[in-house]
Length: 238
Image (cartoon, rainbow, N blue to C red):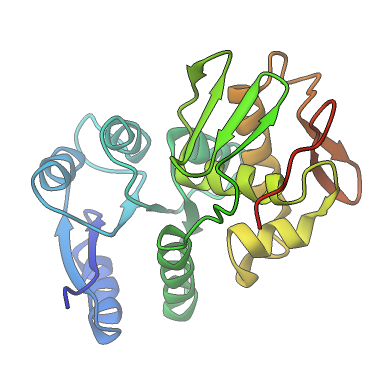
């Protein structure tokens, strides 16, 4: 059975050795790249199950740009590893297409928990009891894992798609914040409300005509979010 392969992109040799030692102790196969260009070359030529990507890299490609370029051809899960811990930095990371965000300094235990959680999410199966769900002009095709609006395919990241599917499982019902975080990200994230808000905002930007006045993803302050489907509610996925 092939080992899970992880690419670590960072120009700090000591940190790379530390991360590599911890990952290999858990049975993962680890490769590394010191620059954004080297990382892109390796991702284009090799198969990886996860990328741990620093934001501040030498050269003219930072982690945000590397993440954006990878998302042009791959949906491999990405954890951004950085010393930047401001909320706007995290939002920029999510906007670039990252799946998680870990700030330095971090413990080996925290790193491994994040790695396992992201790998678990990326390997999960989406429920497909019914082939699709129609919400007004929005169609979620569970069988093909696609989302369309007015016949136009909407490009969602794997995490955005999982979040939308979780809301679709409870269509026209409020799903509590902690339940969404636990189901989509894992139990380690049940208190990470900033994660949820950021992903809801970018999901709205992709599927709502006016993200500031959403008609599909409705917020219930202090409680959670709901996928609203006008008219008759079809059978839900289980």
